[in-house]
Image (cartoon, rainbow, N blue to C red; front, side, top):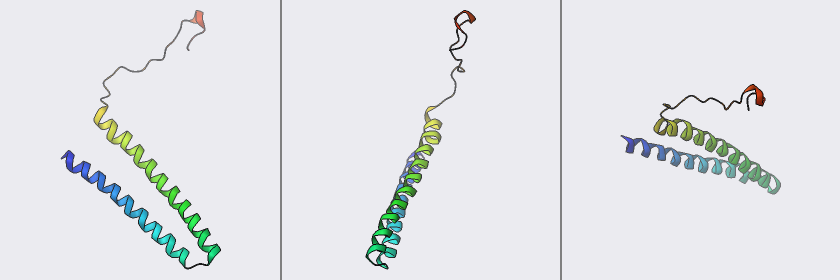
Length: 95
């Protein structure tokens, strides 16, 4: 079962690649309808938009992999509760 879920996880990466191609085609299709200044403005702003959008997608996927998949596989939560280091009142209290 783990092999199937890992394969499906990598298929999601292929979908992100297809999304990138579709967005790039859309940007260049719109840019080709414009003259020189509009063309370059559309290409530059379109690529900045794609970069920001895909950066957000990558950030979300990184958080998902770290917190959901990483913690569910490797974190047991059976340790001791955290207690901060404290010093007695003669030394000024808590660090």
